[in-house]
Image (cartoon, rainbow, N blue to C red; front, side, top):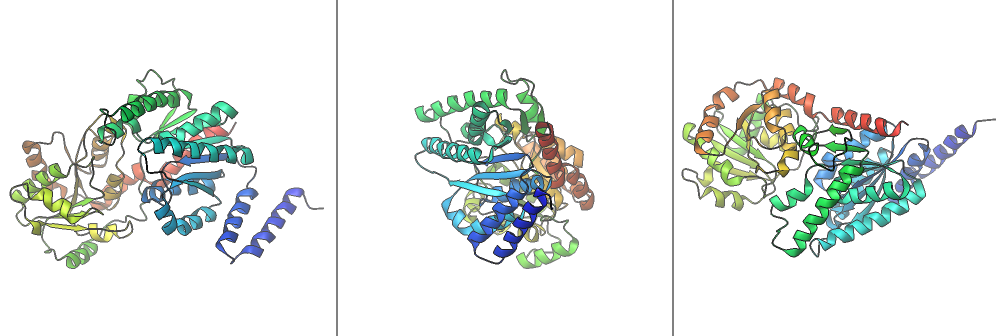
Length: 447
């Protein structure tokens, strides 16, 4: 007579065979069956206030979870999705999660009214998480940022479920320093006080804490609420398969496409332009670069409108509209455009909350073998540049520092791209990040 586990596996295998090739609903059933077959594995509820149909979810959540699922953990993913993006990308995310044996559940993101919408989202997440726990009896919650952590803390207090606080950054202070929460408003002032209190509760109650930076870790260890819980540093990783080492042939092709001269100095910027990225200061730096390198060009690879860049450039002497290309790109298209540049430039607003920030773009840029001009005072950026010998760090955003950075460019252009990539891989590689998460899961769940 066959053992019960063997019979169970054969029966589920037959069911999977029967539903292969059928409708999307059947593929959802297939995912649930794969999920159930791994019933002896530790059960983890991963809660994210970011959507998996958002670019961030696809680059900074799903790759980790796929790796953790392969490591033998039974992952249920509960995310907060925007309706328009969900309609557009739901099938893609289903394919990824089902293929990895991850059960994906979601709620829809609420936009209005400000602040109060977050409380409603928290209510939805809590209701959904409680229903899932009643069904699956989780061993641990892995909570990405603060709104998700409220639910994880509830499950710990009510049911003894272990709580991993994946902090991601000093979210409450980011809201204020980034201009999203104006403390002159009673609503935002109350929200700030509420979430600072909750932040202390999360730190005090967590069984494990994830920080993006050593700088952020050191700051947390000074907080009165910190009880000595292990803090693991895992920076935002880069997918080195998506961002390959750029070659001279890649540069030649990209420059032909964009109409750049073969010997022109081209400075690139990658990513969004918002409250945290200092457009005026970056353009001031480029103006100094152009003074020393007549004919220099700047390429913005961003979803932001070209008019935003040009309006800011008009305020700076010596810059012309013809100095700039501003082009959108999908994640996979980025290397083909960035290949036109010799180096990359970005400045980020320095603030208290940025101690805990890990700019994803730095890993992606170094992965492509490009040197960087950037500013310090942001997470571990300055240390990473020194460790990788990856570029020039501007300490103060003033004329003297801009000139010093511009004069360092001949030296930057002599750097070996393959060495930059290799050194960056030691810090930013996705498999390294998955390994650190796996070690933390083992620490919390093996017993």
